[in-house]
Amino acid sequence: MQTTCSRREALVELDEWDAAHPRQLFPLESCMLDFRLNDQGEIELKHFGEDTEELIREISYSKLHAQLLSVMPMDGGELSAKAMESIRQAVQHERERLWMNQPTHPQAETEVGKTLQ
Image 1 (cartoon, rainbow, N blue to C red):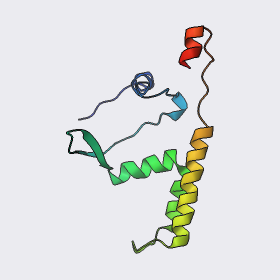
Image 2: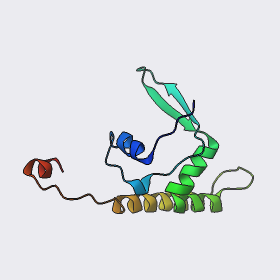
Image 3: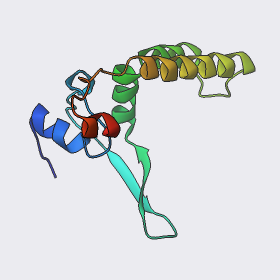
Image 4: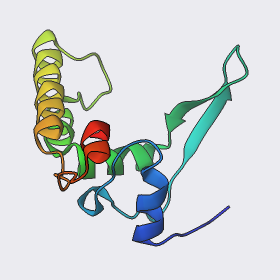
């Protein structure tokens, strides 16, 4: 199934979970997701398709993406303790970067709006 939506429609849909910002929207040419049912009958994400995961990392987590490319063994073997630590540090960097880089929203002007913020 293929659907498209405008940036505005995407913002409205994403706002269901949390405030969305246009700078955080990126179009995908394709997207592959695999789902499963858990024991409670809820739908869970099992994993992303390889290309989808690669694109998300490249766009959203560029430092982590670069670090993974630099430490992944070419033979698909185990990562060294040093490589695992460098990945952990890149993950921490990305989390902090995203936390500090949240788009700002105008301050509410009414008392009700200020309470909600």
